Image 1 (spheres, rainbow, N blue to C red):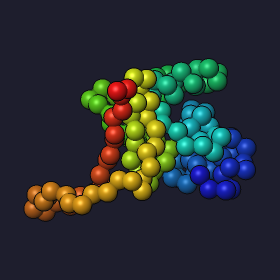
Image 2 (image 1 turned 45 degrees about the vertical axis):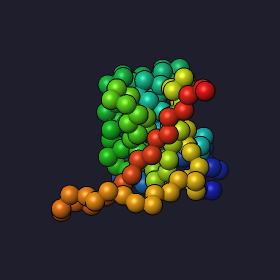
Image 3 (image 1 turned 120 degrees about the vertical axis):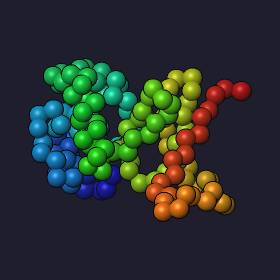
Length: 143
C-alpha cells in the first residue's frame, strides 16, 4: 500500500481503493473493502474467512454477496485469486506477481520472498499462445 493510503481513515481508504477500479461504492462493497484494506496492510483471505470477519464487524452481507464481491474485485484488478487446490481459493490484496507459502497444517497463505525464486527455463508454449503469468505456491508442512 502506498504512503497516502496508510494515513487515511479506514472507510476513506476503502472508498478510494474501490474508486481506483471504477467500482461503485455500495454499502456491501464498502464494508468488505474496509475489512480488506482498511488498515493499509496486505492480506490473503478466503471468502469464508471474509464472511466471518464481516459478521463479527456487524456488516449485513450474505456469503453469496461475499463471493460475488470478491469476484468483482478480482475482475476489476483490486485482488488476485490464488487457487491452492480445487476446493479453496485465496484472495490477495497485493496484486503484483509474487510467490506464496501455503501452510498446510493451518490453511494459511502468506507471501514468500520473491528474490529467491528464479526460473531458468520454461516449457515451449503451444503455437499462438504466450505465458501471461506464473503462479508459485510453495506448500509447507512440518518435517
